[in-house]
Image (cartoon, rainbow, N blue to C red; front, side):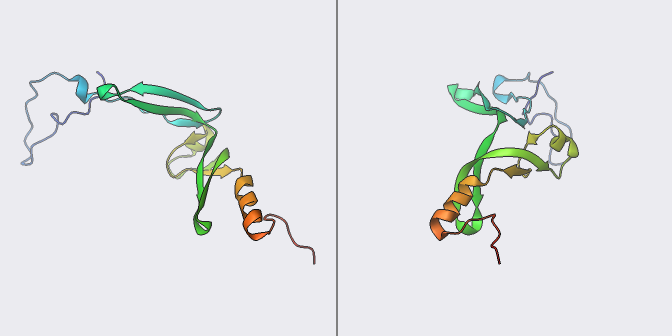
Length: 127
């Protein structure tokens, strides 16, 4: 059957069906979704229309994360998938999607804070 991104199968604005008298075309082609998992970096190159390339991440172990109030972003390691509102299955299989809550290694952010303010984060003061 194949995955197609055509619009010939849709209804007219009036609600009527359109007769499909054309075969599927290569430029209407779609590809199956490949969700990214947590693991050692594995990226595959996908050839696209016009000979362009897309890079499909199959597994990742790091990402760019921002600290909004400090206005900085750092590349940090992803340690674990903690929560996903869509399904617990995605947490169990450690699937990385948009809006997934992950646990990261905050060491680069702590180094930045120490350098800028001279305060060690994560340590309680004695007193």
